[in-house]
Image 1 (cartoon, rainbow, N blue to C red):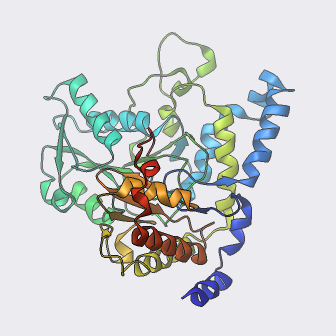
Image 2: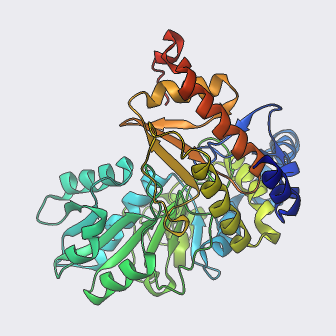
Length: 407
């Protein structure tokens, strides 16, 4: 099998991109679905930003280095990865804050409807934001309703204002039928909001073609923008004149530097900006996104499917691991998840052996495959080490049983 992996690596059209990343020697990194690796270009960009733009040019850099337009220029780099035409994506704030903005904007666009429909095991921050809005506005104006993934389309009705889903489930990697759900929501007069945090950069997306209403996602997973990298917002052009976001920040004003005491929203998607952009974080993400300029996302997706399939096939002789990701490659994102009663300890033992994955309750071992820098031989070696740990039960060592804050 190793010969096959080497052959696949030699034939991989994306193999050269690995050199664009600064990866530690001897480490197999399978956690790019949580924090992407460091692109080498980011280090150079941050050095210039800190030493020259901030250090020498100081406040002049808002103009001379165009800091002020980073939300737009970075958003424009993200737009092609979403299948979005220009003028619909802005880079701003965090995914959580953007969810708040978009949920409230959607409710305002559907007066008389209060139902926010979501998946019961959606990512917690998505649910928490909807719960907070319900507490803020009252259940007569906003009510979160959660159902299983299989019940989503059947649960959309005349009371539904918004269907809010994460495209790729963070626990098991299952992909929602974006086209089918979006179509069903629109047939009932509802809007859709997609969290694309576990999708963008790992697969082709087609928001414009599918007439998606809203989307958001983070910049630090497959986009490799760094820990806590800014998020982004997509607002379909058809909603931009009417959509009003609830956080009236000065940077979302039509003329921020008029310093008017009264808020007037900017035109287009810029109105979804709130406060001053984090320049250093924006510059890091911008440099990371430059890697995608010449990449065919269809090739990225094809490699992802082969990587994850081969990883799963390499572990079929480990019945103690319960595969909870979809068995069909087309139905899962760029990750593989297993369940085991000692999941946390196994992940710690793997880290000690040089393989970085991560753990999610309850009992889930999660492995993310970033096609730009993960090789087929690495995936095979990671599976071998995991089998060895399961066979030897080395995960039972006391050091691997100690739970750390971040899992």
